[in-house]
Length: 339
Image (cartoon, rainbow, N blue to C red; front, top):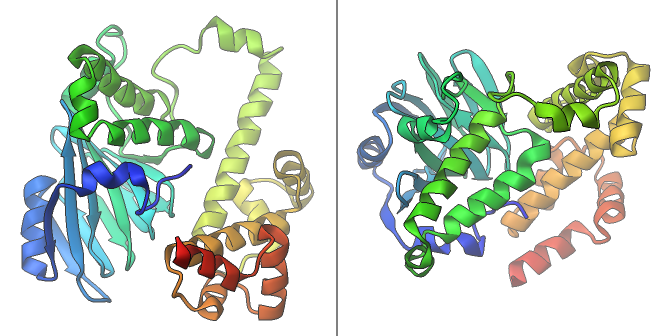
């Protein structure tokens, strides 16, 4: 299950609140002290900032919110990388020219050399893991032929979200003093190196280690393997595009262009991977976004939320919503309010 701000596994982190503040200068100074010097531009909304912190051996974990819509321009990181997971809301991040749309539930890895710019939308809360370069080097110490470095910015692939979430939930569980004291120090070191290795090994660029005979044997031919990789990249590109355009008008041709294929091929791709037509996939992802918002904020206006995610006809929206979730939007809010 993906993390949310109310996930029980975050309780150990929430027990150590470094600050809560609505004073803009104080917020900047506290965050700069913990993470990196930066320029902070406050945009729309009232400041409602909070920072929570947990520490293992080499990894430091934070939960950070600003409350308002903000733009953050940090100095390049000298000896660490950051992993941002959007627990609530979302952000647009530019790292050395790579633009990432980090929607709710997605994870971005940030290791900029020259420039980083982040736009956090109002109400966003991010889980941040600070990974020292020393840990990255330790993760690949046995393979001197490969440099232990991360790309300036990339998203954890969707197909690996479950594995990454499990790693992070284990990490958060260790922040409680009871669990940490019961774990052997050498195992904890190994666990932290595995987190670093996961990030290094799953970058969009070529893997840092050879694929090995097991992968070669799993593919009957290089042609079949290339076809699989190409299909996976097209679906990833399509899903990333839809994530970025949940609130914007989108045509079938737009989706095909995002995937880099014809409309006919797009129909075949969506039927093969998702079992639905492309525009139905778009609608379902928008419905999922609406439901996530209503669950997180049971007091939100159903009408405003539906319109924000591209549903102009409210009668059809209610019918689509009920067909997908077997309940009406108000029922979703009622259950979430009770919980």
